[in-house]
Image (cartoon, rainbow, N blue to C red; front, top):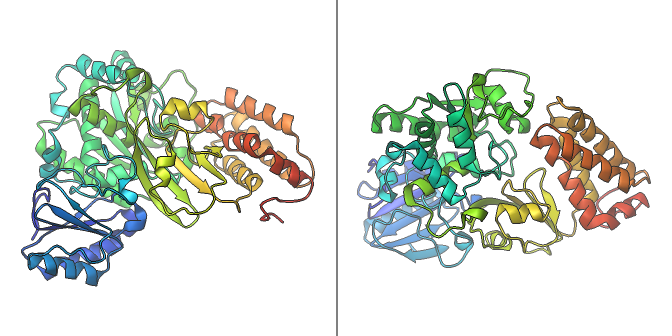
Length: 515
């Protein structure tokens, strides 16, 4: 039995999968729908915990059983049990009691889904991604209520909301300032939803487009109404087919649901790390095949897509906009932007796991969501150009991460004792040399020299001061965040593990992994 929404259905079976496990999820969906016509069955978005997929959630009389890594046979027996009036609890990782008709994922009291909190992730794994009924079960659309643009901008200003993710034109900066600039600039404004995050470690934006596309696009339309924009563009990675599909479905839903919405178009960009940088994203959207960073000023909010004032926000930013405009900001401290942040945790034999942390949580709270039992030698925080730290006792808010020399792109990589930090630094420097756009000398030549100087360590020459001066120049003079951030892994590796660099210059690898 299929309907337009699943929230409130009882009994019900939800099959939570993402792009990586959708084929298996579709097989489960077909098999359980053939098993019973009386149980509501639906495919929902991923929860963010890749290791649990395909995750089947069976609901009966205000109780939900969580069945991880579910086989076809197990899913069919779960539906049969519901059909007979009993909850299938055998083999469940958790059974949660909740209010009937709850609009948010009922979280267990322990286990990986209990790590952090679920505010912007609340619908992920529970609601049908493009169901208007499910979206309204949590709250109303915010875009139609943006009748006073100044008021919307003022509310974001009061919330102190900052951009999230490296692909946002307001990364770690005030959202309201960008909106005000775009409104005052000459030309017809545009809004770009930049979801082309090609760092495979950073899956948060893809997760949101796959699991909560209506929240993302509702906020994008609200931004468009606040600016009196003429169009909204959703810029996906060409490799993220499910995110593209869900975004396109959400656009069709919004066109039917809202009166004369701003036109929205979903486009795919190249699967290249540099293509996510805000000005190179604009270059790709304009159809340029050679992507190069643009000089700033002027910033995209002043002169962006085809010379028009353009807001460029990530899905991570937009779901926070949706929360502020729909529910207010409560007692949040505007000066510190104390709203939640998303982090994806990785490690050897650790499946991709996305958690949501409050501003007062330490990063160590994210470790509770993953099966990492080794001794933690270090963590790289911030993605491919993140910073190394020996301790995760760092607050999750952006200013604390930056003060600790870490990145703010929402990735936590866990490394055990077998990880060589010189090899780590070399790999990240080589990535920078290969992937940079080539426009500015500090980044183009700096990443090349950085890689060469790290190779020299293996030949007995560790020029610590020269390396630090090179990285200082790159950080201070590159024209975009690529060159500014590329030195961070090397700099923090030297700060935290300099004895390993000196040992390599002497011909030995303390981790025992380099030849």
